[in-house]
Amino acid sequence: MSTNDTPAASNFIRSIIANDLKDNKNNGQVITRFPPEPNGYLHIGHAKSICLNFGIAAENNGRCNLRFDDTNPEKESDEYVEAIKRDVQWLGFEWSELHHASDYFEQLYSYAVQLIEQGVAYVDSLSAEQIRIYRGTLTEAGKESPDRSRSIAENLDLFARMRAGEFADGQYVLRAKIDMASPNINMRDPALYRIRRVHHQRTGNDWCIYPMYDYTHCISDAIENITHSLCTLEFEDHRPLYDWVLDQLKTPCHPQQIEFARLQLEYTIVSKRKLNQLVTEQHVHGWDDPRMPTIAGLRRAGFTPKAIRDFCERIGLTKQNSWIEMGVLEYCIREDLNDNAPRAMAVLQPLRVVIDNYQEDQIEELEVGNHPQKPELGKRRVPFSKIILIEQDDFAEIPPAKFKRLTAGGEVRLRGSYVIQCNDVIKDNEGNIIELRCSYDPDTLGKNPVGRKVKGVIHWVSEQHSHPAELRLYDRLFKVANPDNEENFLDAINPDSLKILTDCRVEASLANPEPESRYQFERIGYFCFDAKDSVAGKLVFNRTVTLRDNGEKD
Image 1 (cartoon, rainbow, N blue to C red):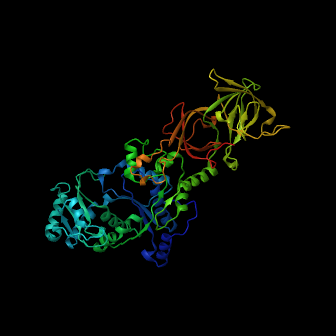
Image 2: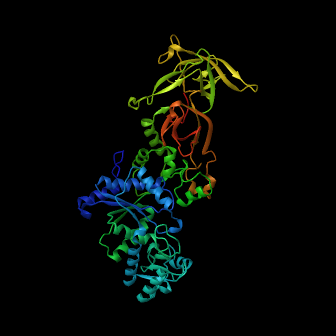
Image 3: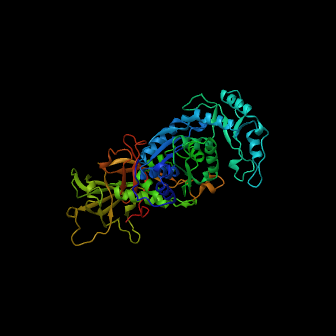
């Protein structure tokens, strides 16, 4: 398990657990679990639950299990199982035990038989539509199914035959017998089992009946001796059913379910169904597209585990749903990368600069620090030669007011290098600037020129030594803060969420970056090396986030 990088703030869940420990409840143990369904990739909302469950356990010398709720095989796969394990570990956590709900299929079936024998469960032949109608509404009580009065013997026989595969999908369901007049619709004889002939990724074709989530979850918690079952607020109305099942079965362990507000982050969606739609309809380039709010997408964009953990701690825990500004997440990653990302130089739209008074075959290896505030991050050698490349918009023939970069006849300092002066502007037949002819002052390496003040500083790379690169400038996937409020969330997709620059150049030190290496490209933003899409002769870097000043140049 990992410990959080930000000091843990007090919240109502920590207070509940502190009181439980004070009273020696659960023999002083804290055992939690993170129970995702393997029907998609984890997203930023799951990160909050991961940090909470694993963090609470770690803070109290407890244990946290990873359990896959694999009771709906139509939508689940091993790909998602492996992706979830990978994401949890990448975030910095390690589970105490690894389980699957399918591990308990036989026990769950036996418990269902026990409920039938106790007279609190029955096999129902109503269709799904009929069950919905019989259930009633929020203001009207439901009515009992004609099958509710079946004998225990008949229910046991039908349930055994359901398991044996004698009936068609949907022909029967097993329901709890609770209260069709309950003000909580979840307690109006909820389904416990349904018939579904679907191949399961772990149990194959051994089963043709599968337990429902509300039935499976509480029993799985009890089997694993979970002490605190932490879940989001949408399960608050399900808690009476959670407790009812365990009370009927009289399980030795009866976990305490505690609900907290889910993470709602502006400019994103966290519905797995909608995320899957984005992927399958190719609105994005896979689950790990850097515009996706998935952990895999955030990772590929260059977000760090530390920044995500810090974000989850900063937003805190409440019992009230609220929206979190995207700026909070961006602040966390900027803070981390500003402190820890090495600096490098990249030119997005190159303009050729020939230094006339620099020798043709001369090459200098300039020593440049990797971080202005962290000498422990070392230095790198940056080649300087006769022909360099600067940003096109770092030069203006007719400069606007307060322009502090290179102008015709003007001077500017090259980052970590010399002061140069523009002496001539070369244009093509259409009047486009294609080259600058400049001179450099050899006495200005690491010091100011004598008798004059140079205000501007720009970045650059050596044409001969730099490497071709593709820089992908990612922005928010949606153009509105809450795309779920739109009639069709796809209409809210931001058409400018990705801009690809294909003719960029990066400095020589970036010839062979490690996968997921993160850099501050000076004066441009924070970028992450994309090993997945990089090929020989073309490095790919994804923009994680802009600089604090939104990328504005000096």
